Length: 260
Ligand SMILES: [Zn+2]
Image (tube, rainbow, N blue to C red; front, side):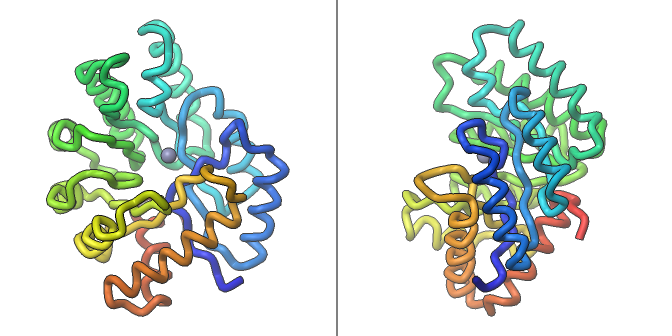
């Protein structure tokens, strides 16, 4: 295998994935000279496993957060407050390098309304600011609402919008806040839309991610497929593959404050 690309967003702590299978993939990738990944947070139930991975694998950096989908599925405000308390104490752990996922998801508007989602996004952004952490943003629909909140609270320590699915026209506004924009290994993505997006993102803000797990791929297989997508991106942008490979790893390190 040629050197696989850095993965700026995956869920290596997913409870449905047997740890042995994840470890086997990480062993294989590290042996191939892989620059690593950021494993993103979902909810407190995954803290222990994510801690374990970040401790055992120095190439994997760790974010913790409260995913809007996770919060939407909790029964009530008391449960959400408990989750927030758990998050705050986990943020003290030295393996944590970023805060997220946090964000807005319009698909859950009927069970968890916009104003409540905005309130939790704001809490997350304030916490990131206070702790000088970059953020991992999940935004589905509601890109305008997210932008207003981000402008109001600020993201002084950067971060990125993972798996961008918003209008291409809004890319510059998010970039102006210092945020990276990630293109995901998403087989359902419309190729023309992806092409336009890839060309709209600035050279120093572009990120690539698997957002694994999905489909029937092992983690190592997903990283290999994402690396093929990287080659495609280089062609679309008219850049040399090797140059883009190096720059995307640098972008992730800078935007998520990962050590080299
Ligand atoms: Zn994710």
